[in-house]
Image (cartoon, rainbow, N blue to C red; front, top):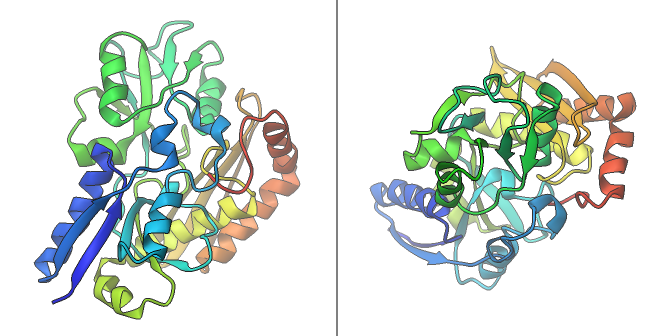
Length: 311
């Protein structure tokens, strides 16, 4: 059978994801090697992601390894992948999706509603910040970077009253002890692609594409294609205050989406069903822009809070 080399970031979660894909490939009889690659996003830990604005900050170095032939495929959290891939690459598989929701983690409090006035909440996501502030304008939102263990340690040590994280990462790592609330999607709309893994290869590498085709999940492919089309239509990378949650229902795709200003004082919501995932994402994005999303996003970019188009 084939020998496949996988490129991955070195964080605990990234390695879990890469090893998960490795094990599925080994079951098929393939020999697998893992190469750990440090990305720009791994090196910049003292600045909120929304203010970094480096194109493909979690993917650029991995794509370089792919282009040079040092690795055959790369395993990414799909929400880290730019909506428009660099020329020469393709997403060959999107795996069955984990829970795409955000979760409320705390030592002392059971839910967002239970937080005391002016409680300290940790997140570096403008999307999460906006929706938190819409619910609770009194909350003090503070930056939170680092891997899952670092974030949970800061919470346990009392730096924050609560932190908001992705359910998928905590579930995969088995670190759910401090999860007190799975936040409903109509309260906190998730990031486009959250909970899904994207397997990237060199464009036109038919051999590798064929070997990993079994990893592609049609439902995950449809829902994330819709979400990423919406994000692309809005000209946003993963760090802007845009939420997208799509799912396949009775053969059609249902999409809920939001655009918000960082203070949460204005949130535009749109829901729609459609047969074509990409078309649906584009249409909902266009509607949000017409309803005032363009002005909200121009303000975000103008204030230097995020850089348009790519994470």
